Image 1 (tube, one colour):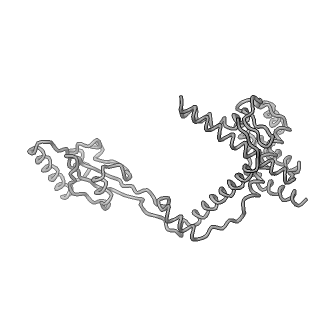
Image 2: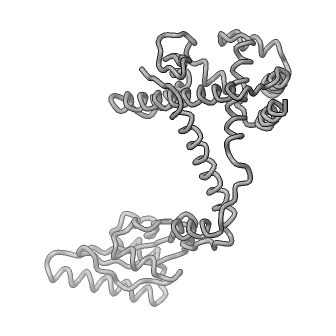
Image 3: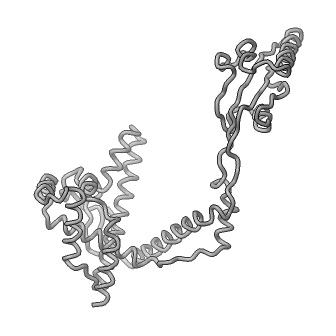
Length: 329
């Protein structure tokens, strides 16, 4: 009796996480539920191709909007294989529940159905029933489906340790190994003047002299955007040389090095690159700073707890699979 009560409590605690009725209909009623062939047998229980297609239908709909041809066929095959694997695991979990002689009382299922009617149908039971009928569901089938969802959720919760504790050493190591996760992207607001050089020595010298003249005018107080509009041959000339906010890897390496090392408001020296002459100015910058371990400790701990819970789940499922007779077709 205590066992039944515990598993029932686990099921109740998971009510809020169970999918709403409308979401269930959308995901599971894309195709008629017709047994059209055996996809797998799990300890004597049959999983059909139609069940696989119903579970993978939402994913397939998205894939059809993103890919075509052989790529689409490959991705659909992968989606259906993933759906079949999920259905096999689901069946193993339900079988483990029954083997332990657990039960979920009928009134728990009735309460869940009532909750769905209140949340998704404004309390209108008739509309709920008509929606089931339109989707070729009976109330009994829907209750069975909800019961299985509750079983799977309860069993998953039962087989993961609660209050998992992550050692400070693991948190610190994760921080050291993944500092980029906690570092804001470095960006600068850049302006640029580009004066093209020429292959022949005489013209090249003249162009460099022009670049030096422009730099002198800027040093004397001339507005950078005005100088860019007059002298620059860059594509942003009409914008006063304004490149907007850029990240690293946007510019060629020699230009990036100068730009990202410039203090805000400072004008660069003349940078020679690719036979051209560049003058850069940084109007603003942000990012590049890394949050401290103290700031991100709760975030890392939460992530590591989730990863550990997933590992526990997978080890448990692997154990169920190793003891089962599973045949796929």
